[in-house]
Length: 115
Length: 113
Image 1: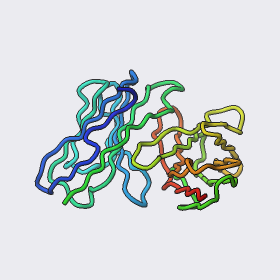
Image 2: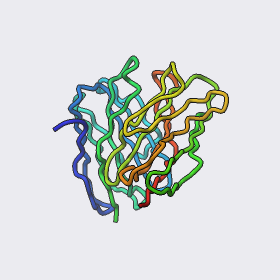
Image 3: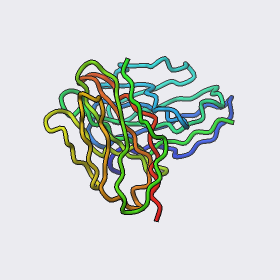
Image 4: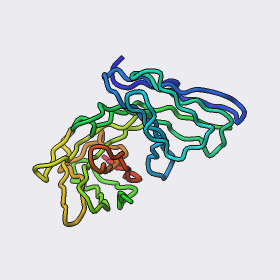
């Protein structure tokens, strides 16, 4: 595997379910991100992890819970979601610090549908 | 607060025609500017970036962009588009080395034969 991978690619879940999205980066980066992409809205940054510590949480509801066990893996745990949470969830990584921190590499995303 | 405005939500164009996708940003400090492309059912891929130096930046797939500080613009151009350029294009701004990327709403480029 190369680059940034995300699983599953598609997920349909009910409002009472609990599921997790997984992201893995194979680039040796030390920063990882979760974004939400909804139709007709700009990409919304949800969480940022740098050196496995959460450095940003952009007022995301608590029904979204991130986890970064190491610099290569990032999870987004989901529970009691709402239909308006249906979106494409994108993971990205970058090498933090210095000029290289400017470029983020994105995974293909998980298309989430909440029924 | 920083913002990024992509003036056109959709741009239809015929194959081999030139195209310009517009991007304006608001910031009173130095910023770094990016264009990303998203093909159907894929994540975002970096097309090009402006960090410093020459205001004309060349990227992948024949795209280029020009940073205009006085007009706070970073328009993306390609002299001759292909069907394969059909995708959504996102302009993004980053304030300083520690700032996060702020994205525009995207422009859907549709190239017709």
